[in-house]
Image (cartoon, rainbow, N blue to C red; front, side, top):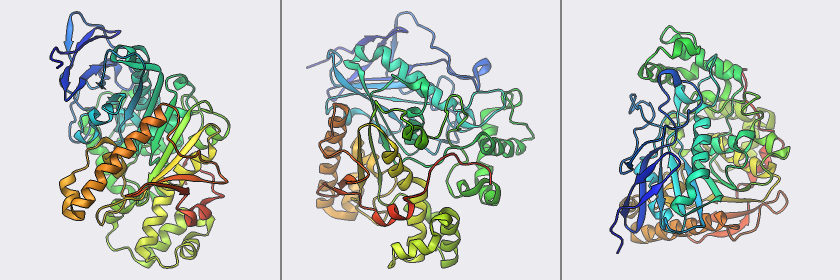
Length: 481
């Protein structure tokens, strides 16, 4: 039995973790200096080395957000390793979601232990979000949260071997905003060479022009009487900027004529296509050959927008028509959806159309744009009225779905099915991280897709009606209307 606390020498110093259920766990390892003071709104600065042994037993504080506005030493990461003495375990690096607004690697639903026990070193990180990480600020670099992720990936490159991982076999994986960041990383020259494979789950199709991002920042600044410049924003406490952002988020529907369809999303932020760090949106970048040497596993859930749709109450025929004509007007709008889904109610059409615009079709089109090896999946399994909802695939993958909740809704058989499905997804993710997830590659002709139900199968992409509606659309940068 292993009893001694594991100690690993990193490039900045020695860290001491703990053994938990046969996994060595290291929490709260700094990968960059706190991004405050003179470093606020700047690229992440290299972490300062330390003497002696640093305990890595607790998660680092969250980056500033509504639930934790005062996080300081927040640019930290965590490592789970089933065998620090190994030399060639695949490395899986998790980038959490959260609408580019909130989230933390300390979220118990994102615990990496179960995934690590399948035979991989698992790493998760905090990165700047909200105004701190994604607002367009004059005098500051855009996409600071993604710059944090690049710094964390460089740390992994330099230190993975000490935890039993293979630095030449790194797979990044993330869901929702995390997937959006990974899609951006695929198009970023500065991220080249930091990972070999990527798994993107439910990519949001929102990448902003500097003009759109700047308009959002101007409105946020106006809430507190400030211009969105580095000189003025750096003098404002993060809490005030968070509060201003929340106010603007509530007001977003009023900006629909200038900000466009982003006003129906739950966030005013997205990666900024600045022409420098992020030269292009992911779809044209991959179609042009970017990341062709990166293997890609990409997918979404069937009912991506169901939970978000509840914000709108009982959707009327008029609301569905207005929404679908705005989102897909050039593709036939609501008429195309009525033809593609003749039995759907207005509420169902509204949900399907918004899911297509925000996540399902951006995901599919990125797979079709990729010039390297690519595999596609869709989660269709569900256990309650929420359906195969946004984030359900993450809970299954990480083994953190509340099985008591599943039993209450779907009985013991449903809970057993959830356990089996989660185990299969972990095996498939690990197989991908070592070369091939054991189903055919995706191509625009055959469209082979792993379909996760109670009994996973492989077949043509399931959402054929939506695919046909969107087949000629070109996802790209969103700009002011």
